[in-house]
Amino acid sequence: MQTPAGTPPDQRSGDLQDRRSGAQQDRKVRDRIRPPATTGAAAVPLRGASADDEDDGRDALHILPLSILPLETPGLRRARLIKNVRLETVAELFNDAQTGSGQIRIDQLSKCFGIDGPEFRRDLRKIVQIGEAASFDVYSLRLELRRLNIDVEEAAALRLSAAKRAELTSYMRVFTRPLVEHVYGVQGADIASMDDLVRLFAQPDVEEARRRLQLTADRLDIPLGEIPAFLEDYADIFLSLAYFKRCLDDIVPDVQGFLGWMAELYQVSEVRRDARQSRMLDEIGHDLTDIATSITGRFESFDNRSRDFWRDINPESFRSIRDLIVTHHLTIGGVLCGLAVKMNLWKHRFGRGGGPVRRLEFIRSEILPGLAHIKTIEQASRNSMGR
Image (cartoon, rainbow, N blue to C red):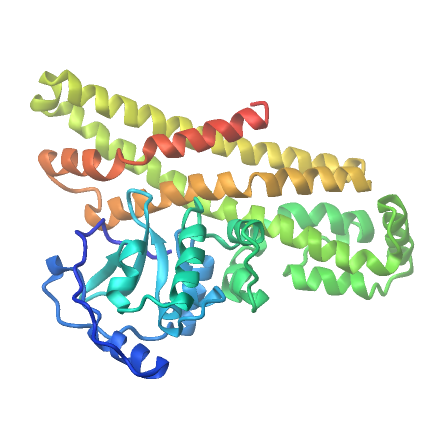
């Protein structure tokens, strides 16, 4: 996942002169966009996203390439929304090693692009609506776009990249192994990917497997020919869980590392003498530990429910676990997105170093803002699961 830079000051863009055509307008806008004043960099063209950039956006928790939305203003489709470290949604117009991240508030887009026609206003309403999502992972976006009645023309835009799906194969085995053993026995339990699994069940070549498959179809109360469609649904639901689990496994060690880095401040005399500083560190440490412990427990609950499903497979048990996981997509995404953005910026900014004054300022200005929101999301989800 890419790491957004810290929140820059408001970018001031002069009004652009009127353009005669859409094509000229987009071209000139790209040539005139400038980075935030603090970077001191020259103008940077706003190029179309590369295939790698699009994959990064689809696989990330905090990035939404606007190219996936049905927008009427072509120039907007080259930008993307990101969550900054304060968990605010901003528009990112460029991002590279030399100039950093060019971020502006969504309400500044019309000034930046010099456009204020009806098409642009319709696009802006969509961007504002979807910008309220707590996470931009593809699973949360599916739910949010459906809720907002926004159709996405290309369904592949709301799927993880092929590279990410392959990376998650080992995580998926937790969920696919019981299914394969249910039909093929233990000898068929090692499947390389979910695509292989669907093909395996679409064309069973073992008589005993066909018999068990028919039994499974009967227990699910669906025709045998609909088993591949069921598997597609099953695969997508548990691929989402594998994706979030991988994100969690990346984030938890970072949270632990950050807590150790922060704890070193307790040895600083200024902190020992200042009760307010100590209390702030205590509260942040407690909140981060509570959030990480709680969301880890949620995944353990999902694992248990998935095992229960295969002990008593039936339409109700599948709908129950599917609805449980989908219901928690938005909150899981929101919690992981918030933690990932903050931990990534910490690693990028400090790499575990830094003096006491810089550490305290970073914790106060970048870690603390938005942390209560993450905690609220996680507590609400924990309560809904009866934890």
